[in-house]
Picture 1 (cartoon, chains in turn purple, brown):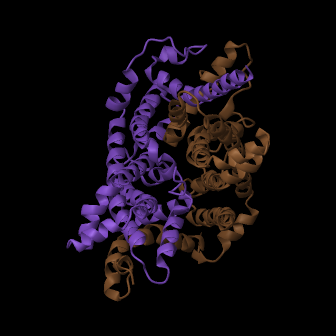
Picture 2: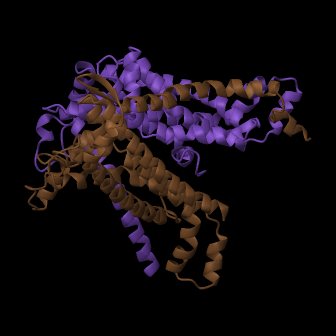
Picture 3: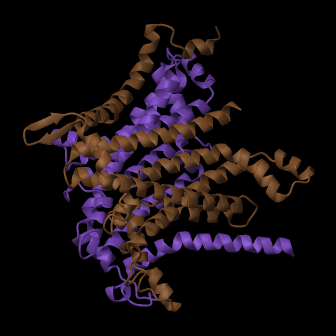
Amino acid sequence: MRYQDAKSFRYILLLAALVFALAPVYWMLTISLKSEGDQFAMPPPWFVFTPTLEHYYDAFVTSGFGEYLLTSAIVAVTSTACALIIGTLAAYALARFELPWKLNPRLSLWILSTRMFPAIVTAVPLFLMMRDLRLLNTRASLIIVYTAFNLPFVVWMMRGFFADLPRDLEEAALVDGDSRLGALVRVVLPLVAPGLAATAVFCLIVSWNEFLFALVLTQTDAAMTLPVGIAGRVTQYEIKWGVMSAAAAVAIVPILVFALALQKYLVRGLSMGAVKG
Amino acid sequence: MPKSRRFFSAQNRRELLLPAVFIAPALAVLLSLSIYPLIYSITISLQTETAAGVVWGVQNFARLFSDNFFWTAMAHTFVYAIAALTCEFLLGLGLALLLNAQIRGRGLFRASLLVPMMLPTVVVGVVWRLMLNPNFGAINGTLKRFGINTENLTWTASPKLAMLSVIAVDVWQWTPFVFLVLLAGLQAIPQEPYEAALIDGSSRWQTFWHVTLPLLKPSILIVLLLRTMDLLRVFDQIFILTEGGPGFATETISLYIYRTAFRFFDFGYAAAMSFVLLALTNVISAIYIKFLQAKEAN
């Protein structure tokens, strides 16, 4: 009997945590679907209201969020691709070649340490650099900065995945007359493909969600990402809650899809490879 | 020399060429976009604009000592970090222990609990502005339904409640992360120590204190390290929720640096402050890493 009580207590606690985690997001989704009358109704209708898509139309057709969405997608995909190519090569070299002067651990740690800088520390000089290069308010500036930001992460994740692979396979390929680059492309990469995909998805999420650099580097409609566009509406005097919620709801969609695809690698990625969950 | 060693070791210059070519692009990117900006930032921090032109010196750093706003922002940052870290750790550990058992629907619980931390921080800000809005927000609306007077509960607009509100939002978003890492740590603990504890007749509390916690220590240290670094540099959520206000009530160090650089265009002073933040995060992470290494050496 006592065991049963403890068990139901456990479920009640977990359910409470679940409601606490999800209710606020659900509330935002309802606001994005409510007409203005329902939005401001008191007491607030949690479940019963007439849904409308007018805010979504308003946001993405009339208010320019479509363009922000496009910028976010272009910046996230391009910077992820760059970081993956550059980072995977470096990770392979660090995992597989013995460099002199203990360079393997030293370089790896140094690369990791560049990721530990608080963003605001580099945001100030990067803004001035981009201003001097006349790259402010361009998508290129964000692609460049996000590539550098994701690179240490790619190196650390991929170094771990390469280290998990036995070396015999590459040696066999080499004996068969492959070049080292050939062995990497034809033998090793297919084997680390799941890890590579997980790393890519992490980079996509980070770039998609990033806010501070985007805020500092882009202020025009043509170069603004979705988070900056949403934030711009929040801090305006008169806030269009429905439009903002609709844009925020759309910003969540790719993240949820990615996160579902990532479940297996989530812990490893979030701890920079420190925990192999 | 075994064959594998010869294949991967670089004994002469020619064998160093390939790894060098592989690593070079990454080094170039990091040197130009992480290290060069730092050096550039140092030079900016050492310059002050005066009527007579640019003057070099440590004026920006000297100014820190007499700037009350800076020290207030520093204090806010620590209050925020310590309060949020404590809540997130205790709640995350509790949830991990609850879910580290055979229960139905565990995968679903785990996946749903992760939603908050995956969201863009800007969206988190929007979500909680909607929840906490004094006029039509869900929190006050629901409290009113239970007959509670919500007139003074203006949350992010109230000087007294604003800090509490932004901390609560951080706890909402990041407890799942602590939970996730600690759950992974718990599941990696082998069964044998528990069986030994059972045979010794330890109570559940003793088992937790003497078996679970010590074995979980590496995961705990890693998650505390990662959270502390993020908390000390917090920017996004607070920027959306309160912009540091009302007044200066929730201004943390990152927000103050942002305001100094991009509202007042005093880049030199902003750079100087950012080095204080950098030094602070470095010292704290070094302490954590010392603990971690001590653990590994045992």
